[in-house]
Image (tube, rainbow, N blue to C red; front, side, top):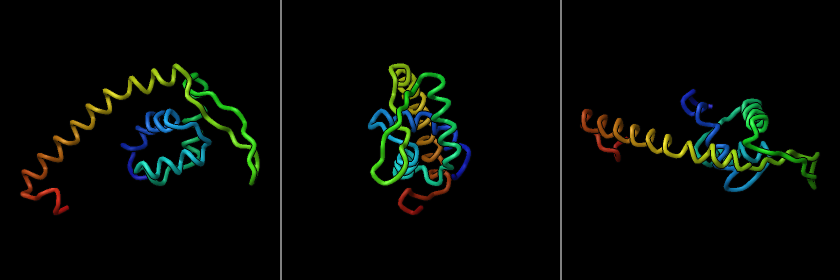
Length: 116
């Protein structure tokens, strides 16, 4: 996985993906990649999921699979939804800071966003 800055945001990203649609670990890792977070180490993702389950942000249940062993399916709890909702203003603020930083870079460097 690229950079620790993205790794620190896996918690809200996983909550969001599970809010959109419950899923199992490897499926969630694939969905993270499509979100723009590539190369998530499965062990790290599963530790986060188990931790969120211990703190009652998620519940899980075993789901039979047609092509392999049963898999654990994760779902958001009301506490998980409240936690995700608390992340949204922080993520929005972070996005504004990043936008401001990038705009300053482009102004100072004389580059335009299209030349990157």
